[in-house]
Length: 150
Image 1 (cartoon, rainbow, N blue to C red):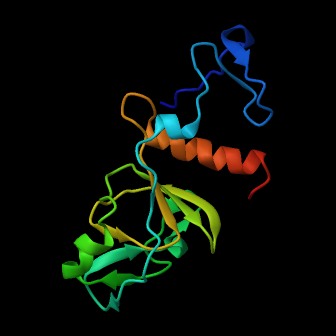
Image 2: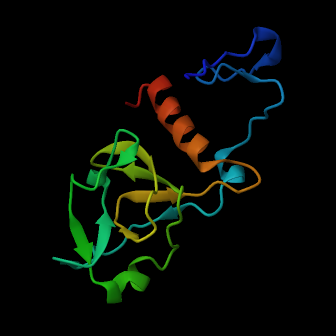
Image 3: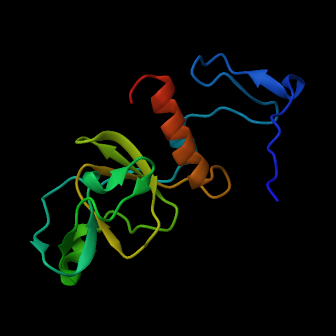
């Protein structure tokens, strides 16, 4: 059986005075992103040596339309280089990835922890008591549509 989703009535909403957000539930608050996430990790640096087999390297090419598409680019790094490549922070299920160029502004949640992250990818992790990572991905996709970035 399909359950219908019912939108909240207007009396349970409030205006945000942020044109691209519009109305939100009355019990929600608006905060700056940096207060709602842990460290924002940018994986810029030297391009890691690529090999034929090893740890799958997620590049900006793999992040498209809200998901990680493993077939778009298949690159690997040596397992022995993994700790150096990921020294800024290891991926966790649900973390949000954001591409900084080529293509810019693509967003996806991590669905496999056994990966390495390449340059041009930034990782966000919502603070567990403040922001759900899947909502963060949804919000980032919605914000880019409303501001005309996509």
